[in-house]
Amino acid sequence: MSRKTQNFWDKVSGLSRSSPKEPGPVARKTVNAALEHLSKDSAVLDVGCGSGELTLAIARNVVSAHAVDPSSGMIEVANAKLGEQGAANVVFAQGDLSTLQDRKGTFTAVIAFNVLHYMQDIPEASRQTGALLARDGLFLSSTACMGERRSFLGMLMRLLTRLGIVPSMHFFKLADLTDLIARGGFQITETKKLSDWPEYFIVAKKSA
Image 1 (cartoon, rainbow, N blue to C red):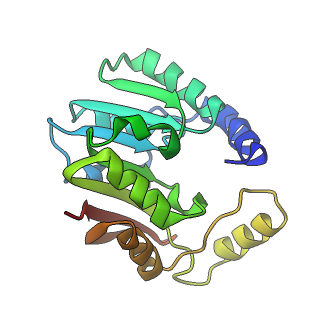
Image 2 (spheres, one colour):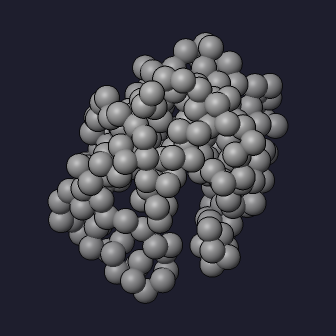
Protein backbone atom coordinates (compact mmCIF):
# COMPACT_ATOMS: atom_id res chain seq x y z
CA MET A 1 0.00 0.00 0.00
CA SER A 2 1.36 3.41 -0.98
CA ARG A 3 1.83 6.13 1.61
CA LYS A 4 -0.93 8.18 -0.10
CA THR A 5 -3.38 5.28 0.12
CA GLN A 6 -2.46 4.57 3.74
CA ASN A 7 -3.02 8.24 4.61
CA PHE A 8 -6.46 8.05 2.99
CA TRP A 9 -7.51 5.07 5.11
CA ASP A 10 -5.98 6.58 8.24
CA LYS A 11 -8.24 9.60 7.69
CA VAL A 12 -11.27 7.39 7.06
CA SER A 13 -10.54 5.58 10.33
CA GLY A 14 -11.48 8.76 12.18
CA LEU A 15 -15.04 8.40 10.88
CA SER A 16 -15.05 4.74 11.92
CA ARG A 17 -14.63 5.67 15.57
CA SER A 18 -18.25 6.77 15.72
CA SER A 19 -19.65 4.00 13.49
CA PRO A 20 -22.21 1.55 14.93
CA LYS A 21 -20.77 -1.29 16.95
CA GLU A 22 -22.94 -3.82 15.09
CA PRO A 23 -22.79 -4.41 11.29
CA GLY A 24 -25.45 -2.86 9.06
CA PRO A 25 -27.85 -4.89 6.86
CA VAL A 26 -25.46 -5.70 3.99
CA ALA A 27 -22.57 -6.30 6.38
CA ARG A 28 -24.79 -8.64 8.37
CA LYS A 29 -25.56 -10.57 5.16
CA THR A 30 -21.81 -10.84 4.60
CA VAL A 31 -21.22 -12.16 8.12
CA ASN A 32 -24.08 -14.67 7.84
CA ALA A 33 -22.81 -15.88 4.48
CA ALA A 34 -19.36 -16.43 5.97
CA LEU A 35 -20.72 -18.23 9.04
CA GLU A 36 -22.37 -20.79 6.76
CA HIS A 37 -18.85 -21.99 5.96
CA LEU A 38 -17.23 -21.57 9.39
CA SER A 39 -17.48 -23.51 12.64
CA LYS A 40 -16.44 -23.30 16.27
CA ASP A 41 -13.15 -24.94 15.23
CA SER A 42 -12.30 -22.41 12.52
CA ALA A 43 -9.07 -20.43 12.80
CA VAL A 44 -9.78 -17.32 10.73
CA LEU A 45 -7.55 -14.69 9.18
CA ASP A 46 -9.27 -11.41 8.25
CA VAL A 47 -7.31 -9.49 5.60
CA GLY A 48 -8.10 -5.78 5.34
CA CYS A 49 -10.21 -5.84 8.48
CA GLY A 50 -10.73 -2.08 8.63
CA SER A 51 -12.22 -0.96 11.91
CA GLY A 52 -12.97 -4.51 12.99
CA GLU A 53 -16.77 -4.75 13.24
CA LEU A 54 -17.07 -7.78 10.96
CA THR A 55 -14.07 -9.48 12.55
CA LEU A 56 -15.64 -9.18 15.98
CA ALA A 57 -19.02 -10.41 14.73
CA ILE A 58 -17.44 -13.51 13.20
CA ALA A 59 -15.12 -14.12 16.17
CA ARG A 60 -18.12 -14.95 18.37
CA ASN A 61 -18.59 -18.11 16.33
CA VAL A 62 -15.02 -19.38 15.72
CA VAL A 63 -12.06 -20.51 17.80
CA SER A 64 -9.81 -17.60 16.82
CA ALA A 65 -9.59 -14.57 14.55
CA HIS A 66 -6.34 -12.88 13.54
CA ALA A 67 -7.07 -9.64 11.69
CA VAL A 68 -4.72 -7.33 9.78
CA ASP A 69 -5.01 -4.01 7.99
CA PRO A 70 -2.29 -1.80 6.47
CA SER A 71 -3.79 1.31 8.08
CA SER A 72 -2.48 2.01 11.58
CA GLY A 73 -5.51 4.25 12.14
CA MET A 74 -7.92 1.42 11.37
CA ILE A 75 -6.07 -0.95 13.69
CA GLU A 76 -6.19 1.65 16.46
CA VAL A 77 -9.98 1.88 16.08
CA ALA A 78 -10.32 -1.92 15.90
CA ASN A 79 -8.31 -2.39 19.09
CA ALA A 80 -10.45 0.20 20.86
CA LYS A 81 -13.57 -1.77 19.89
CA LEU A 82 -11.87 -4.98 20.95
CA GLY A 83 -11.21 -3.42 24.34
CA GLU A 84 -14.88 -2.51 24.68
CA GLN A 85 -16.09 -6.00 23.77
CA GLY A 86 -13.33 -7.99 25.46
CA ALA A 87 -13.10 -10.79 22.87
CA ALA A 88 -10.21 -12.94 24.06
CA ASN A 89 -9.91 -14.89 20.79
CA VAL A 90 -9.18 -11.86 18.54
CA VAL A 91 -5.89 -10.20 17.60
CA PHE A 92 -5.71 -7.02 15.52
CA ALA A 93 -2.36 -6.06 13.97
CA GLN A 94 -1.08 -3.70 11.30
CA GLY A 95 -0.04 -5.65 8.21
CA ASP A 96 -1.14 -7.42 5.04
CA LEU A 97 -0.68 -10.75 3.27
CA SER A 98 3.01 -10.12 2.69
CA THR A 99 3.70 -9.72 6.42
CA LEU A 100 2.11 -13.06 7.36
CA GLN A 101 4.20 -15.55 5.42
CA ASP A 102 5.60 -17.01 8.64
CA ARG A 103 2.05 -18.28 9.34
CA LYS A 104 1.89 -20.69 6.38
CA GLY A 105 -0.72 -23.43 6.66
CA THR A 106 -2.08 -22.22 9.99
CA PHE A 107 -5.56 -20.91 9.08
CA THR A 108 -8.65 -22.86 8.10
CA ALA A 109 -10.27 -19.83 6.47
CA VAL A 110 -9.15 -16.46 5.16
CA ILE A 111 -11.76 -13.72 4.77
CA ALA A 112 -11.42 -10.54 2.75
CA PHE A 113 -14.43 -8.24 2.81
CA ASN A 114 -14.59 -5.18 0.54
CA VAL A 115 -10.87 -5.17 -0.20
CA LEU A 116 -10.16 -7.22 -3.35
CA HIS A 117 -11.07 -4.36 -5.69
CA TYR A 118 -8.22 -2.34 -4.10
CA MET A 119 -5.59 -5.07 -4.65
CA GLN A 120 -3.37 -4.65 -7.70
CA ASP A 121 -2.58 -8.34 -8.32
CA ILE A 122 -5.43 -10.69 -7.41
CA PRO A 123 -3.75 -13.95 -8.58
CA GLU A 124 -0.68 -13.15 -6.45
CA ALA A 125 -2.88 -12.23 -3.48
CA SER A 126 -4.70 -15.55 -3.97
CA ARG A 127 -1.41 -17.46 -4.03
CA GLN A 128 -0.30 -15.76 -0.82
CA THR A 129 -3.69 -16.55 0.71
CA GLY A 130 -3.43 -20.20 -0.30
CA ALA A 131 -0.02 -20.47 1.36
CA LEU A 132 -1.55 -19.36 4.66
CA LEU A 133 -4.37 -21.89 4.50
CA ALA A 134 -4.35 -25.44 5.78
CA ARG A 135 -5.37 -28.28 3.45
CA ASP A 136 -8.89 -27.76 2.04
CA GLY A 137 -8.93 -24.24 3.53
CA LEU A 138 -11.45 -21.67 2.34
CA PHE A 139 -11.05 -18.17 0.94
CA LEU A 140 -14.23 -16.17 1.62
CA SER A 141 -14.59 -12.74 0.07
CA SER A 142 -17.20 -10.08 -0.67
CA THR A 143 -16.53 -7.52 -3.37
CA ALA A 144 -18.51 -4.78 -5.10
CA CYS A 145 -18.26 -5.84 -8.76
CA MET A 146 -19.16 -2.48 -10.25
CA GLY A 147 -18.28 -3.63 -13.74
CA GLU A 148 -21.45 -5.72 -13.73
CA ARG A 149 -23.68 -2.78 -14.63
CA ARG A 150 -23.58 0.93 -15.26
CA SER A 151 -24.75 3.08 -12.36
CA PHE A 152 -24.39 6.62 -11.08
CA LEU A 153 -22.37 5.35 -8.13
CA GLY A 154 -20.05 3.42 -10.42
CA MET A 155 -19.48 6.47 -12.63
CA LEU A 156 -18.88 8.64 -9.56
CA MET A 157 -16.32 6.20 -8.17
CA ARG A 158 -14.51 6.07 -11.52
CA LEU A 159 -14.30 9.87 -11.53
CA LEU A 160 -13.07 10.05 -7.94
CA THR A 161 -10.48 7.40 -8.71
CA ARG A 162 -9.20 9.26 -11.77
CA LEU A 163 -8.97 12.46 -9.74
CA GLY A 164 -6.99 10.69 -7.03
CA ILE A 165 -9.58 11.52 -4.38
CA VAL A 166 -10.10 7.85 -3.50
CA PRO A 167 -7.56 5.01 -3.88
CA SER A 168 -7.20 3.24 -7.21
CA MET A 169 -9.63 0.36 -7.60
CA HIS A 170 -10.77 -2.28 -10.08
CA PHE A 171 -14.27 -2.28 -11.57
CA PHE A 172 -14.64 -6.04 -11.84
CA LYS A 173 -17.25 -8.17 -13.47
CA LEU A 174 -17.99 -11.22 -11.34
CA ALA A 175 -16.66 -13.68 -13.93
CA ASP A 176 -13.39 -11.78 -14.22
CA LEU A 177 -12.87 -11.69 -10.45
CA THR A 178 -13.61 -15.39 -9.96
CA ASP A 179 -11.20 -16.21 -12.80
CA LEU A 180 -8.44 -14.18 -11.16
CA ILE A 181 -8.99 -15.90 -7.80
CA ALA A 182 -8.97 -19.32 -9.47
CA ARG A 183 -5.65 -18.53 -11.17
CA GLY A 184 -4.11 -18.23 -7.71
CA GLY A 185 -4.85 -21.88 -6.90
CA PHE A 186 -8.50 -21.99 -5.86
CA GLN A 187 -11.67 -23.73 -6.97
CA ILE A 188 -14.72 -21.45 -6.91
CA THR A 189 -17.53 -23.35 -5.17
CA GLU A 190 -20.19 -20.66 -4.66
CA THR A 191 -21.14 -17.09 -5.54
CA LYS A 192 -23.97 -15.13 -3.99
CA LYS A 193 -25.25 -11.61 -4.69
CA LEU A 194 -25.52 -9.57 -1.49
CA SER A 195 -26.62 -6.12 -2.66
CA ASP A 196 -27.53 -3.95 -5.65
CA TRP A 197 -24.01 -2.43 -5.84
CA PRO A 198 -23.75 -5.32 -7.02
CA GLU A 199 -21.74 -6.89 -4.20
CA TYR A 200 -20.92 -10.60 -4.45
CA PHE A 201 -19.90 -13.14 -1.85
CA ILE A 202 -17.46 -15.70 -3.24
CA VAL A 203 -16.47 -19.03 -1.71
CA ALA A 204 -13.19 -20.51 -2.99
CA LYS A 205 -11.59 -23.77 -1.83
CA LYS A 206 -7.83 -24.24 -1.83
CA SER A 207 -6.85 -26.60 -4.63
CA ALA A 208 -4.96 -29.75 -3.67
